Length: 467
Picture (cartoon, rainbow, N blue to C red):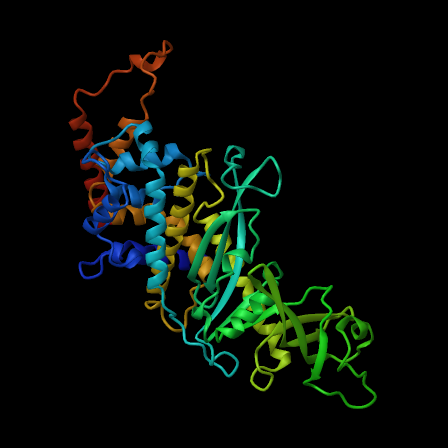
């Protein structure tokens, strides 16, 4: 009952998001208008001639028009476009629009929304107040048709797969950066040129990005990091930040693997020296030693959870470091939302351009839904919680209604449904001989059906009002 009440509340809120002062497209995408999107589409080559293509309708169809059915299909997108279009197009024409220039257009819009994202939460508490954001970096693999292996090489020799690399603010799920590569590209490769944007931010790093050079670049740019430590790591311990009483094992001057099996203390807090390999310059690679903090917390089985970090021990106690790192799990929920609500893992094509259009459409759809989420959160009472994952599931159920509110005013749903049936129900094969149901007489005029549908709809509304 609690879930049902929450669902009804959110659905009504979404359906009421189009007052004159705050139109729904503005809530979802900021300053997008039909005019400026059409201008951008012409600049990027999406529109080359003035024909049937409606960029505004095409964009929202790709973003919100795949919510029906169990899978995203090109036929479903085409049908959705036609049910709103004044000038319907053939399926071949619609699929021809899914071009490389359209993929570039969608990627550009993703970049715009990412740049507009600003932290909407203030980090409270003594552990987090010094950071402007908490960033998690991770990636997810997207399986593709094997015909695309020349463009997106997979780890399997005969397969094709892409990898989507993301950096998100885990406290409010704001996307900070996004990059698309082949699966064979290493997780850390897209972040080789880590810049000043990390200053004042705390990055939570998985083992896929385990790289001493990355740690060094984050530190040089004024950022902070927490990373898990590989089991085979064997750094030199140069300082003990948490001396133990009694006859404790001396760890300073020894390597990690030499002492790890003998330690009995609950918490290990030391400074270690890591060998950082710099980039090649004139054919030579320089090395340097960098000092970073290593924290270990005792596991129930007797081993240790180990972390590398540059967080100062006097501000972030070792006991709290693991609690902070567990927040990294939120990036997994981000990818789950992309594949669930955004249908990122449903790419029904073997053409590179079409696949890239669908990938960037999924990302853009997710970005728009997160803008709506943040706007809704300002309306929810302080004593109510609006979990991002819960909202993602609710939004996926009302996506078709949101598309209605964006593209059409109320009162046209009956005509739209009729137009859809008239366009999609007839067999597209005009010369098929087996037409046993063709003897059913057609209405005298389609307008009569429209009038009847409107009449019944009006009677239904009046009847509910009277009740």
